[in-house]
Length: 179
Image 1 (tube, rainbow, N blue to C red):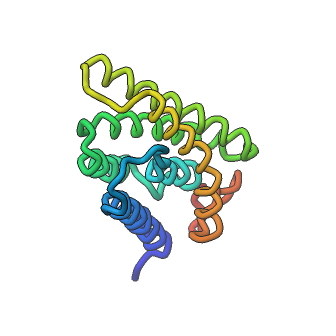
Image 2: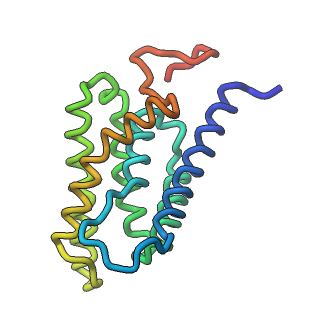
Image 3: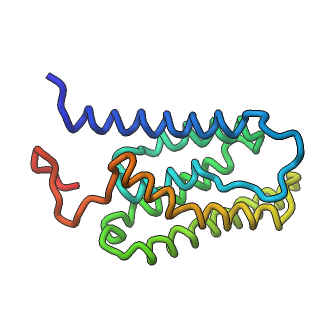
């Protein structure tokens, strides 16, 4: 007999991997031959942060590391650096998930925006420290802002399309375990 809670958890983990794979596939498609003037948001980062804040048990650290390492390789970034930075950021959020559960969305957006900005700055500083060539500061700042602006849209899609919501304070699953 299959445990419904474990099946649901596995289903959402597979959904997360599938969405990340779809985003990666669309990102590497050669749709335009001219360079972009405005970089798009980092949707994998948004998706990861939303899912960690909504249901941290659905996206374990190893799953996040695997998806982001693949993203690093396909985006031709230094393998592991962005993965480590995002993993540290998501674990920071995961450790505070119970306290962040009841806050208003505007405050959540502010906290996530500050975290995205901090991760972007740390990434830029580490790359500069090791003299790794990187995009211009303006493009990096635009991508960071685009990621922060798109965050509420990813939250809405996660809530209404995938029915993934925050656990209410004191909510329990079918077996009586606290969420």
